[in-house]
Length: 353
Image 1: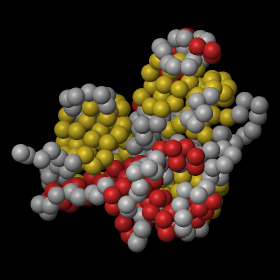
Image 2: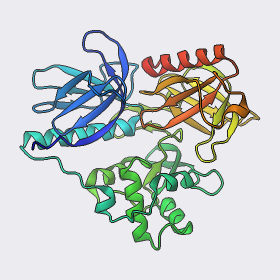
Image 3: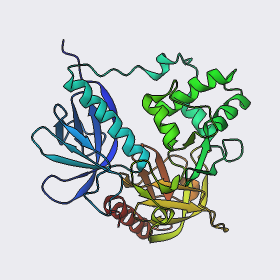
Image 4: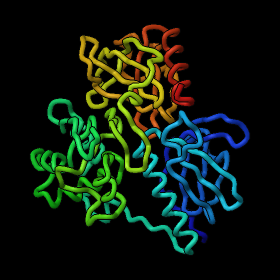
């Protein structure tokens, strides 16, 4: 019986149309021998398939001036396919895995990636999703910092040492060696992202462990609003002003918390180039409480949702699903306002303007 190709990576990316200069979010699946892309994650049949044998991937791709985090895949027949990730680290992860898949198929080898849980022997009782939510707790979780290194400023991030310290103090592990294994699993499953050359090199296999227990190895949560001021290692200019962008729409909405599922009023500011939806304490404060990455997201109206009747939320809820499959539930004041927000977010997520 023929073995099905391994799914190496999957998630929402924005893909450029092959006939017209249109960019649309697609559910993209990287297999051992090709890339399939679907209109929606739930679809059974792909809209297309790109073979990887004899292909090459190029990143960064500067073919589209105002579009950041684009990479180009050129197939054996010299046809180009363009994909746009939500942020720098996500693009790098896709490019890294595509290059590895191409290397294996061109060399006649099978792509091999051991299960994280088995390879580091994690107990089955460890719930990485629950641990991630605890790490993000505003009061008892890991504190996000502003760190400087190599003439760059990393915002909303933390060090590898801070992660291990927190795991030890929360009694999640017995010692720092166990902490490295657990943190490596969180990194592999996407709950943590590397920021900066040191941590990215380790995640790519250039160190003894994927995760580093070091004070100069930086990491961040994927939905934290992380941004870097200065120059990245691959010549993409990532300036603070670019991450702040032009304000497209702003106003107050109710946001459901990820941990306690409670609803709180937040001031939301929708910005473009690149696309972010920052949210703030409506009582004041210049620093955002967080940000939602909109590149490659899907936004839809939600007509019904458990535990929302007491908020009179009928017909005015909408959901944002990011490229990392993180779900955000928001409530507008009216159906008209909800429609305006959905249209604005869709426009920004697809075009950046």
